[in-house]
Amino acid sequence: MERLQKAIAASGYTSRRKAEDLIAAGRVKVNGEVISELGFKVKKGDIIMIDDKALKGENKVYYVFYKPKGCICSLSDELGRSTVIDYFPEVEERIYPVGRLDYDTTGVLLMSNDGEFANLMMHPSSHLEKVYEVSVSGLVQGETLHKLEKGVYLEGTKTLPCKIKVTHKDIEHKTTILMIKLVEGKNRQVKKMFEAMGHKVKRLHRLQVGTINLKGLTPGHYRLLKPQEVKELKTMAMAKKTSGKKR
Image 1 (cartoon, one colour):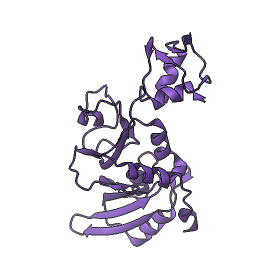
Image 2 (cartoon, one colour):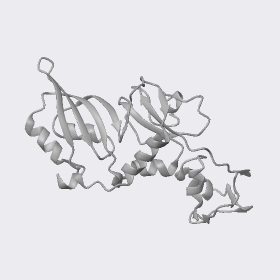
Image 3 (tube, rainbow, N blue to C red):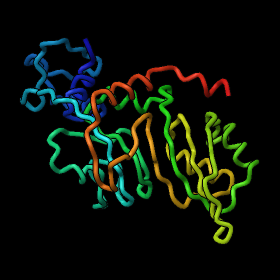
Image 4 (cartoon, rainbow, N blue to C red):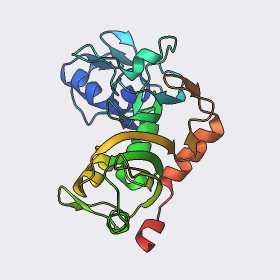
């Protein structure tokens, strides 16, 4: 048995939060009875209806998308800006972004209609490794790198240890390009980390999430993940990462 809002979200109809709103509004029936209790549980075989239409489960799909600059990680935007979903006009399933990348950030973004998969990928305890290429203003010194790798305090919480490598220093324009590998995904974390050390991020590009990279893709394009790739992501996310504590 599982909670009603979870079953609705798992079907791909909408998010769990919006499913709760539907339940509270009295728009959901189970076996013909209106359900307004958020803790209500359903079992296999129960007939769930929303606005008197039977809920049908969708096939679970998983994509890797090369997010271009200038679009937001949302299904719609009140300001009329481009959204990531605009790049999937031919996909019938109701997919949504798994996690977020800023408007001006590019690179790997997972997309799916599997709520459980999304929650697993985004859960703080999953410690799913992510790799970024970041360009910052100023010439980053070794002492700064050491502090960032050990962890810095952001809004009262210390970041987990990470790995950083300088790939290029532009002395003339006072710019540093680095590769950073971390196992967290807090809101705007990479930008906040460098800004906390006095280096403004000029460009941020996510190269990899777990084992998934952008090979064969160009900005604005995507591909379906293979079943083995989805399995590997789930395995990595569920595994307890202890290496960060040992460093």
